[in-house]
Image 1 (cartoon, one colour):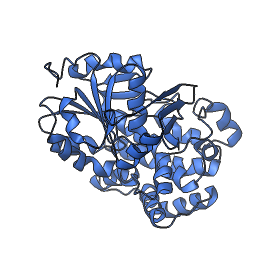
Image 2 (cartoon, one colour):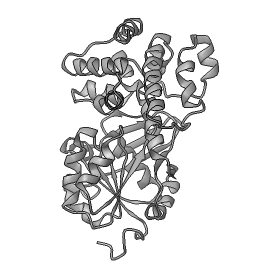
Image 3 (spheres, one colour):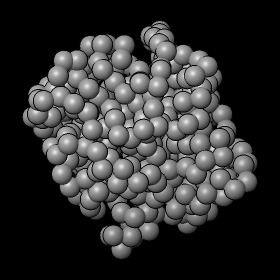
Length: 347
């Protein structure tokens, strides 16, 4: 255990990835590639993978990194959290409370914890379980797909963000060194809702059962996304929650861009279409693996916001229901079929 305070980590910093699945293995591996001291806590299934195969990381810009993960680097033993200078939580949203309870047994008081999870409410869940830690909202904008066991591929653009606080500044160089910059911001509520607006495509991609690029090239699927986004933007306006620009296109204009004819969309949204042809949403990956999805922490957050305002969010409600139905019985929705379903629900 280091004798220094959590504000002044040893060099290289001791960074713990708690819940190392696709996102956690990718972020942890990237930090390793830059020289950071990283330990990942994950499930036995992945420990078995790394007993036989190396960790392989690639991205859509040509990055490649490969390393062996022995039991000292990837473990099921949560007690290693006692030595952490920084914790990155990457568990699925449904596991946030359990993650907090586990970490509370081991973390030193004042240890900074960043939630790199989908949704809005995970930070408060972690804070309720970790009163002695410093828990911050974070955001990971890009898609990570497990191509083969142990091989994690970063398929879309974007950089990490987290709440601005002095105790996180000593760690910024570790993220810079690996080419995965962490930007500290004072407007994380707006950042998280803006990310969620983009994540509203996750259920549509999962229901389509095609890669993201193919899905976004189909105007019917884009119109489904525009419907869910317009509904969400109207609710955010009522709640006086601002959005921030996370893509080349301002968030308020994205539904209009999504609604454009294919030929014009391809011209206007060229950067948005700079997606690896194999990239898919994490929700699709969960459905394929037979796991519960995070739809309640994505579209469900919109429904929750609507309820708090005495309003309804029929498109997001219906998407939530359809994904839950697919968790039980997998089916593919064609773009025109899904659009009719959502328009019908929104009448």
